[in-house]
Image (cartoon, rainbow, N blue to C red; front, side, top):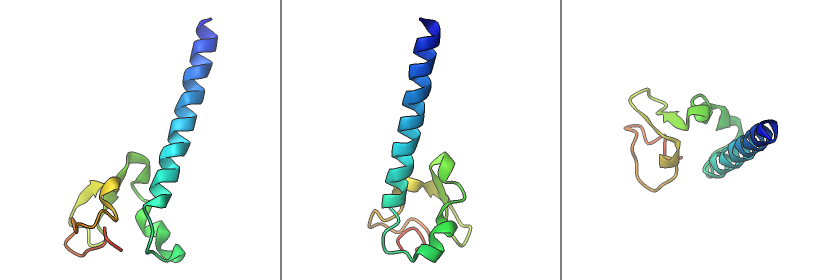
Length: 76
């Protein structure tokens, strides 16, 4: 029974991680595909480092219609 519960917990973790990764990709609208790598460095931690290096903000702050980064890189 314990093995079954651990297996289910592992599967749920994988599904949630895949779903969150999908949501992150959806936030990168208005950005050339060639620039997507600039927005991936801290993605696994759900963070984004402004391209000028000034701040680290939550990835959910990208494309939220508010410029958090001084260089505006969170609003491509």
